Amino acid sequence: MVLLNFNNLINLFISFILIMIFVAFFILSERKVLGYIQIRKGPNKVGLLGLFQSFADLIKLIVKFKVVSGQLRSYISLYSVFLLIFVSFMYCSLYTSWLGNNSSNLSLLIFLVITSLSGYSILGAGWGSYNKYALYGSLRASFGSVTFEACLMGMTLILGLCFLSYNLNCYNVVGVSLFFICPPLYGLWLISMLCETNRTPFDYAESESDLVSGFNTEYCNVYFTCLFACEYLIIYIISWFSALIFFSLFWVYFITFFNIIFFIWIRGTLPRIRYDFFINFMWKYNLLFLVLFLLSIL
Image (cartoon, rainbow, N blue to C red):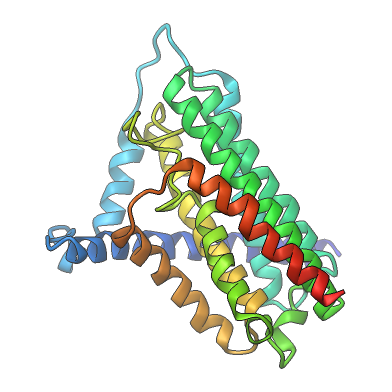
C-alpha cells in the first residue's frame, strides 16, 4: 500500500511538471497567435522563432525579489496562493487518475469540490492584497466561479442520470456521447468554461475602470508566477474535462485541443461584455436551459 501511494505521488508530480511545460508553450502559442490576429509580430527573439520566450520570462520572474517595507500583504493573500497551487495539484491528481484508468466512483463530485476551492483562492488573493482594485477584481472573478459551479452542479446531475455513474473513466468508454444527445448544451458549456477561467469576454477580474492585472496586481516574482501559471493549468484541465463529459473514446483528445484553440481565438476576437448582460444570461437563460433539459431527462 505504501509503495502504491508512493507511485501515485510520483505520477502526480510527473503529470504536474508535464502540464506546466505544456502551459509554457501554450502561453507562447497564445502570444504568437494573438500577434498574428492583431497584425503584429509575437515573441520571436529568444531562441529559435521565440520558442524559449516563456522560459526566459520564468527565469526573469524567479530572479526578481521584493524589498520588504512597512506595507505588507496579509498572510491571507499568501495562503491563497498556496491554496491555488493545492487546487492545481488536485486537478492534476484527477487527470492522472483518469489517464491511469483508476478514477474514483465519485471523481466527478470531487471535481465539483475542487472547483469550489478555486473561488476561495481567488477571493483571498484579492482581499488580502490591501488594494481596492484587486478586491474588486477578486469579487467579480469569484462570482464568475460561483456561476460556473451552479452550471457544473446541473451538469453533474445530467451526467449522473445519463450514465448512472460519477466515475470519469465511465464517460470515456461508452459509445454514446452527451454532445450527440443535446448539441446546444455543449455551446452553453463553452460559455460557462470561459466564465470559470476568467477569460475574454468574461475577464471581469480586470475592467475598464481599473486597468490593472486584476486580483494579482500586488504580486510579483514567484507568487505572480504561481498565480499566472496555475490559471493556465486550470484552462488546460477545464478543456480536458469539457471534452471528456461531452465526447468519448479518441474524440476526447481532439476536442481538448479544439477547446484550447477556442480559448485563444475568443480572446483575439471578442470584446469584454457588460457585467449585467453576463449575469442575466448565465443565471436566467443558461441555467434555465440546464433545468429544462434536466426535467426532460426525468
